[in-house]
Image (cartoon, rainbow, N blue to C red):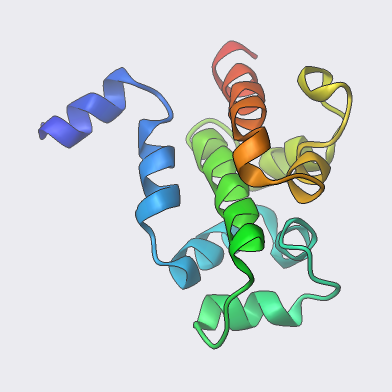
Amino acid sequence: MTARTATAAQRPGLQAAREAVELPFPELVDRLRDLVGVRLIAYVGNVKNTRPVSDWAAGRRSPGAEDEERVRLAFQAARLMRDRYDPATIQSWLMGSNPALDYEAPARHIRDNRAVDVARDIMAAASSFTFVG
């Protein structure tokens, strides 16, 4: 077991945070697309249709910095849940009313705010759902 693997096993969420930061954006979008679908990425990424999401995944274009941060935060939350839940559950969590966020949907909370301002709340809600139930 490498030091990186041992640390990730000891601190749940560390691998999700690492991937959210380290992955090239096209690869991150591609992985997130497998977890939550293109429509939810478009919503979080603040675009009106799914075409830009395909362009992001192909590396043909990039969103603005704030929208990229929002998509990376959505990925981090989804990645955290991936080992315990199937994509349908992860998608439902992102779209559903969440008591930890004053009954707002996590996807809407991410989209309507700066990622840096809501990251703590989103990841606390995701961790609670994933590890506490």
